[in-house]
Image: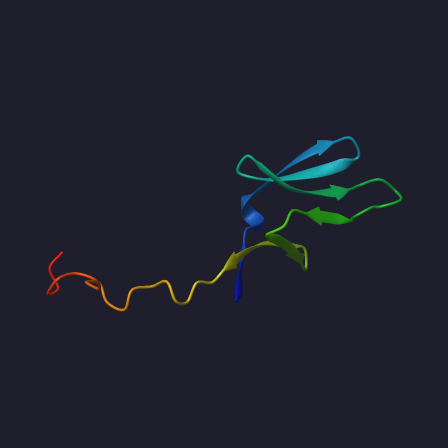
Amino acid sequence: MKNQINVTEQIRTVLKEGKIELFMKEELIGRVSITPEKQGKVELIQGFTEKDGKIFRLIEHLQNDHPKAYVEGCDLGWC
């Protein structure tokens, strides 16, 4: 199961050679073409998606990796 986290406000843009490059922190996560032929086409790396003008990071939800209790695996509950 994948969760989506809205990261739109964390995105920084740079204009470069007919494209707008999208960065999250220092990582290039995608490009938006501004040339007449491909105007507005959004290309994002794996793990990101765009919907309704917002950018989301896809996170895998881990259900079975959580301990059953805080002291799980400890002898008599003392760690």
